[in-house]
Length: 191
Image 1: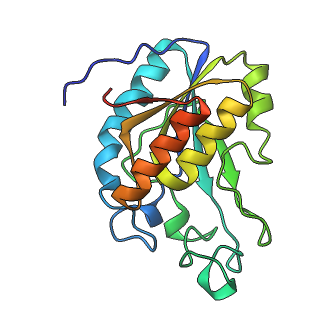
Image 2: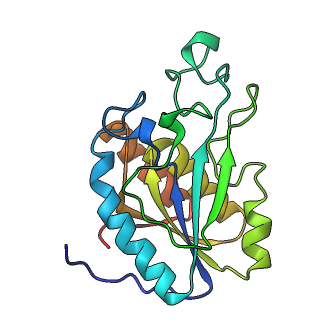
């Protein structure tokens, strides 16, 4: 696959949001076509690593009784339960040594769609003098959107790379992009 580089630099961070087995083909909460973004994300990770940008990978690590699950009144089927294969990152995702890992949604009573929600990530990015964040992953209208809007609110110049994210539904993706743009996120249509 040939693609243009996006111009990452040392003061950037590439945030790979929840590219986990349960959100990919055959997973408990499969996001349509999520597997298709893995080669694109890997190319971006390679660029980030070569340019000295920070690579961050987030994961949902739910307890089995998480409030977001249908059985407990939530909107989703049980997924990404810590200690299960479904919570693992996609097996073809290639992360460099030195990547930063962020775990979220670990408490049963707390929903955490954003990678910035009570994870300490914003403080770590500031400590590392990160100015811009580029967000990829799944699902576009849930965790990607929440993370992007929080990133802007926290003062980071924020970009979402549409080719490297996938929505649960096409309508959800369209609505998410409109909300993100309204919040000040730059949605890049093609890398």
